[in-house]
Amino acid sequence: MTREEAKDKIVEILKTVHTINPERLKNITEKTDFITDLGAPSTELVNIVAKAEEKFSIEFEDDDIDDIGSTMGDTIDLVLKYVNKKQPAL
Image (cartoon, rainbow, N blue to C red):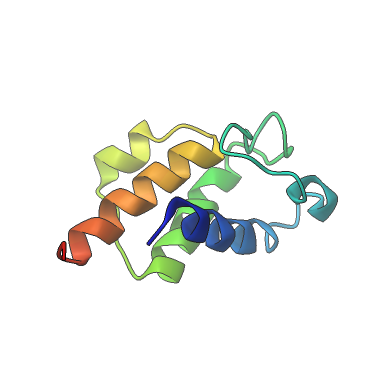
């Protein structure tokens, strides 16, 4: 999975978060912060992570969840770490 594919799927998740204005998702980058740029409450990060686990069919370690930042890039990094663990390299 590419970073762009992961980003697109995470944007799909963010579209389901009622506290995020969908207009803010149009120009999202890896530096976009879910809290400061998108206005998501910090408590919503747990739901975003849970939805990512479901969407990507992965399960994060608690320590990784505790250490995750609040940017799109942080979330992409974490998702790809687990997706790549699941899929053996070619």
